[in-house]
Length: 164
Image (cartoon, rainbow, N blue to C red):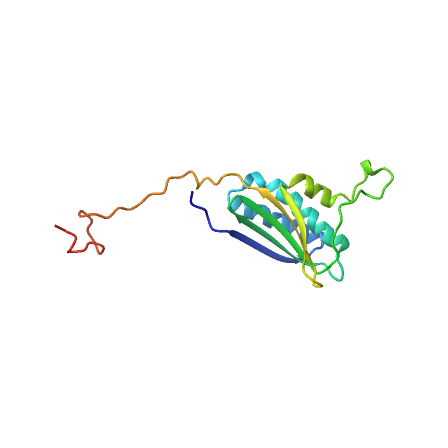
């Protein structure tokens, strides 16, 4: 099997509500360009949840970087911000937790992704990421064509010593 090189996309932004929708559309367009239409809905949901967490909780600012990388059969979406505090998956604080309208961001990420996690970046922030299983590439099933040069080949690759 011939593996494709890594595909990578990055966007820097202020995690403001108006920008979250723009980044969601950028991620969607990039995945469609990579022919990963099957992952668009999950990736949009995941990036929305991560950016909403930055908007609601990150300090001292809302500056962040979204990275989307396809490596072999894994799509990884990550958001890096400048807040070193590590998020926690907790139940919403409401008494009627089943009717809560917020506080479930990382629980959603956990439920919809193949894997997820947080990497501290020292005192300069953290990266929260999730992965999705990519469907097989349509290019992986396409047989590769090979050019075979022989005695009947004309042109600059023909060597007089090889022609008999």
